[in-house]
Length: 189
Image (cartoon, rainbow, N blue to C red; front, side, top):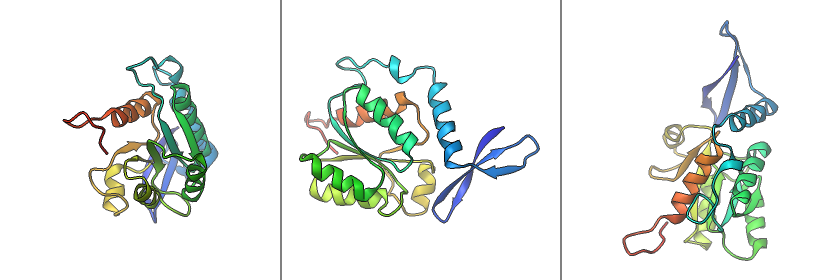
C-alpha cells in the first residue's frame, strides 16, 4: 500500500492510499497523521540527534507556528522547542493573531500553513507584516509550491517548505532564513 498525492480541487488536498490493484480510497486525517509520524520516525537523522550548539541549526528566536493539523503542529513545535526556540502555536489565523498579541512582542518568524479554515496563511502574513514589517514568513503546504502559485494563493519568490517535512529540513530552512544577512551585515526579510 502506498500513499499517492492527487492534484487538489477546490482548494483541498486529496491524498489516497493506493492498493496494488490500483484501487484508491481517500486518506483520513488519522491516517495522514500516522503517515507524517512514520515519515518523521524513519528519517535517518531524528530531531533528537540534531546538534543545537551555537552556530548549528538551533536558535533562540521566537517563532509563531500556525498549522491546522494537530499532529504536524505538535511535531514541529517539539522540534523547534528542543532546539532553543520559543514557539507560539496556533491552529488557525484568528487564533494566531490572538496568541501573538498576547505574547506582547513581535515574533521573529511566522511559519504558517497556506490553506486553513477561515483566514488563509497569505492573509495572516499580510496582517502581521503590516504591524511588524521585520517579521519573516515561511509558508508551508502539502500542495506543491507550483500548484499554490498557479492558483494565485502565493506569489513567486516566497519562502516555502513542502509538507510533510523532516525535522532537519525544517530546522535548516528556518536557520537559513533567520541567519540571512545582506551585504551590510544587517538582517533582511
